Length: 351
Image (cartoon, rainbow, N blue to C red; front, side):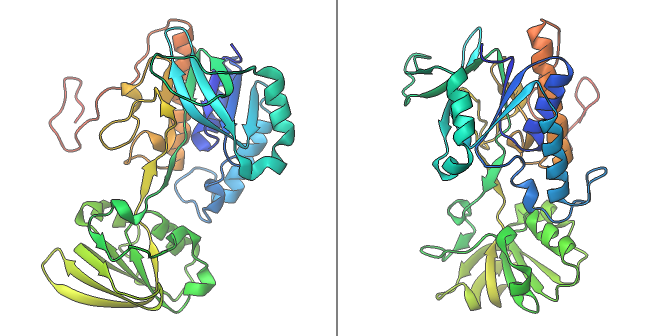
């Protein structure tokens, strides 16, 4: 075995797993495709639901400092785990170098190649894959998180063919100040922008499908935000800079024409697991309870409902402890089918 625990993903969940593993004496190798830990966290200007943290960059720096002091964890930046294989006695990860970060990871590659033999993968029957670095361990924590959804998956949204609409989290505050902004979707980056820039005089017209109404609570009382639940929105012809027009049908059946200075996508996220043995449910997420006994999932990858920094950290620590207990044949609970929110209580009193 190359290590006691493989960790795939260097966000808050993966980093918490590494620290927890080290606390119980487990060696780990953490694989992160970016050129820094907690890359997404560094883009969050305001944090209000994590103890002791007020912004993403400072929290990311603190996490990075903790990992630097974690002698039992080896961090490998600039690499992506493209395939996870699970066997009765081990897991194997195919790890490939991310070319965009070649200059930043030359030393990392040399260290990986010094400890890991380059082989042709020979895992489960019927598994076709390209050669790459193979890392082997008794267990793996997969915490690869989520990526932004594109418009192709939004059936309520039309007129997007050939349109390059930027993501809201990429918006330059100066460029939207004192302007009307059409926001396509009500996902959490909207609340982040609003909290981080209370001085902005922007007017946000937010169109979203009714099933995403629960996402609007943190911005519902912001006077700059106009919320509009819609059955259909058809973006008008032309560019996505001023003026932007859209025809909408609201959930009440009203038809309206919206006009704005600029438009942004804010549709939500999609899970990004590696290929192979990581089990995916019908929603595309990877709940812990459905995994191979040697695979533990953590962070935003687990569920659409619990995508928060604090819950990611907790799940990363829990996953590492699960691997530790499993390595010692100690009983543990790995989760089960999701509980229906608002449903009748189960045998143990949940509901």
